[in-house]
Length: 346
Image (cartoon, rainbow, N blue to C red; front, side, top):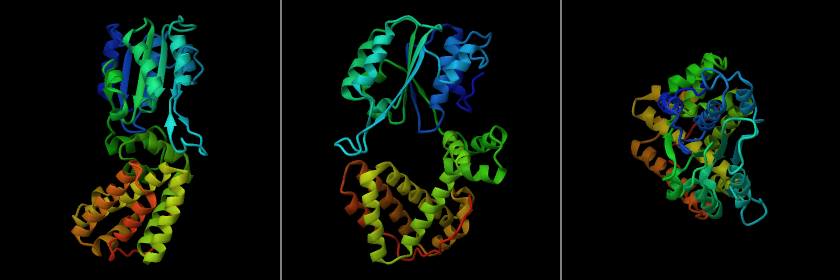
C-alpha cells in the first residue's frame, strides 16, 4: 500500500516501472520541503523488497523493517551540520566520508532483501568530492542497486548527476487535500486543520508536524506578535530589533529566514485583503489585524514592502551584511501600518 498522499502521477509512474520490471537504477525526486519525498522513497524501497502479493504491502516483514529504519539493505544518508564554532558554521554538507561506505556497499550483494536501496536526503548538499564519487557509481549501474536522491534545490545538484537519474517532481498539494488528510488520517479538528492547511502552503508534512507539536504553532504566533510590535514601534525599537535579528542570524540563519518568510506571507495576505480577496489569505486566524493594516496602507506601499522583504531574503542567501539588510528593511516599513498586538491560543 502506497502511503503517499496525493502525487498520483509519481506513484503511477513507479507502479508501471515495477509491473514492467523496468525500475531505473537512480531516481531524482524534486520538490519543496515536506511534500512527501521521503515517504515516496521509503514506499519505493518497500516495493522493491516486498514479499507480499501487491508491493508495497506494508505488512510483510520486509516492509515493516524498512518503515522502522531497521532493514540492512535500505540506507538513508542525510546532511551533517557544520561545526557551529568553525568556518562551516550554519552550513550543511554530505561529505566524502559519508559517501564512501555507500560506494563500498554497492558492490556487495543484498543481505536480507531483493535489492539494496540508498536514499540520499538533501542531494544539493553533496560536497564536490562526494558528488564526483557518486557520479562514478551512477555512470556504471550495479544490478540490484537503486539510488533515490531527494532534493529541495535541484539547481544546486550537479547536472552530471541529474542527467544520470530518472527525474520525479512532487508539487505542493491542493490546500483542500491537506485539510482533508489532516482531518481524516490524523484526526485534527476541522478549524485547526483548515488553518494548518493554509499555513502549510500545500506541504502536508509541515502541517502534520505543526499539528503534532503545539509549540511550533505557538512559536509562529509569538513571531507574528514580535513583527506586529516592531512595525508599530519607532525607529529606535526597529533598529534594536534588527540588531537582535542580526545576532540571531550569526547563530541560526535558517530561523531568521523562516521569520522573514512569515513576514512575507503576512504582507501578501495584506495585499489580498486590499485587493478584495480576503477568502484566500493564509493567516485566517488574524483576519481582523490584516484588515486593519490593509486599511492603513496603499497598494503601492504594500507591493513595495513585499519586494523589499523578498530582496532581503535573497541578499541574506548571498551573504550580504545581515545587519545592513535588516536595518534597511526596518527603514522601509510602511509608516501607516499600525496594528494592535493580539494574543492567540494554539
